[in-house]
Amino acid sequence: MNTLLNIETRNAVLLKMAELLEQERAAIMKINKADLDAYDGDDISMYDRLKVDDSKVDEMIKSAKHLASQEDPVGVERFSFKHDNGMQVYNKTASFGTILIIYESRPDVTVEAAGIAFKSGNKILLKGGKESLKSNLKIVELWHQALKSQGASTDWVEYLQFNRTETQAFLEKPTQKLDLIVPRGGERLIAFVKEHASCPVIISGRGNNFVYVHKEADLDLALKVIINAKTAKISACNALDKVLIDKNLPNKEAFIKNLISKLKEFKVQILGDEAISKFEGVEAIVSDAIWYQEFLDYKIAIAEINSNEDTIAMINKYSGGHSSSIITKNDAVAETFMANVDTAAVYHNASTRFTDGSQLGLGGELAISTDKLHQRGPIGLQHLVTNKWYVHGNGQIR
Image 1 (tube, one colour):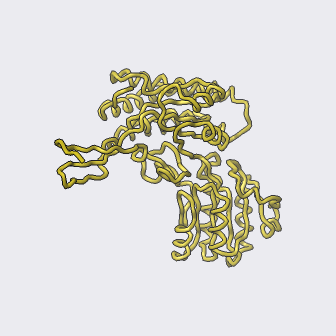
Image 2 (cartoon, helix red, strand yellow):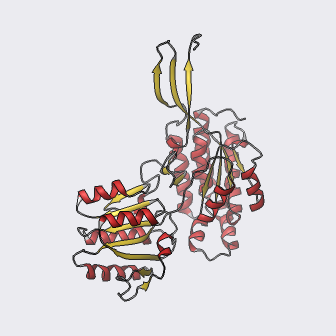
Image 3 (cartoon, rainbow, N blue to C red):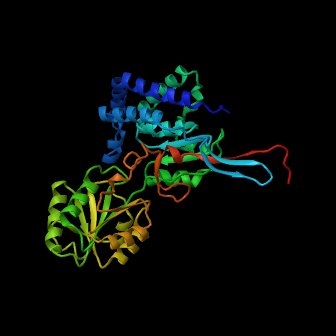
């Protein structure tokens, strides 16, 4: 077992990593181009995630530097208690041990998610997708250089070159100690990990987010939020898929026509319920199953709805438990919506695109969890810890 690296060493490795990413920027992008050229799929969101350009390298560098500047999340006192027999009791945060990150397509995860897990004192096992193998191996090589530069073992970051069968076997019977698994990818990957894992799994990555336009909405604001949440980044799990419009919205028809024409400017395919599909440019929804779907595409489903109560019930039935937003000038209605909608993030008059560790003040995230244990929504550095009891005595017996 690797002994926990002290915080100075962990920070120095992260800063060295930032330096190496800058030095090797051109090489990383060249190697990534080989991965992109070899990608033969037609999934635009997958291609978008796979691509490493200057701004992605900038993000990786920023992430490594930011992590190095953050407080040590390990050994933080959460609770203390003086027993009447004189024992001093503390509860402190502790690292998990070994974390496996299984991910598709995104070479930036090799820096950002691995960096968070490393900073919080864990050994990292990485299992990326075959489509990004060359890019990932190059970045892991940099991790090893950074670790060696500080006299730390390269075992702290290990890349598993497994095919699907080998991955399944490793999940079911790990050949080394494994404390936590974080799958980052689509629903098929997450289902596969959940089915075969023999240790805890943090479930993340499924969106299917809703915006509700209440009858007291500011319509310009509603339009702005919907267009941003839908079109700014379709491959993101915080992108918008569904819009529910209050039946009693004043100027409803003009608003819907305006929304349709704005979405059409971005070449978004629009699906609508009975009320919405009467409008030109909207296809009728043929099955309720559509409400469960996360699109990750230029595609949106819109329906009319009777009330805030109906909206809450519909979101709680169909959404992925990720993000939902209400557009209204009525604070009491917004409060009811936010208290009762069962998603990890709830918004009032803002885009769902902010469900992201760096946007919500965490500096970055390992994943965005739609589970309720042990942390919901973006999982930052300070959440990627477990805890341990420290009890100091001088011979007390019970």
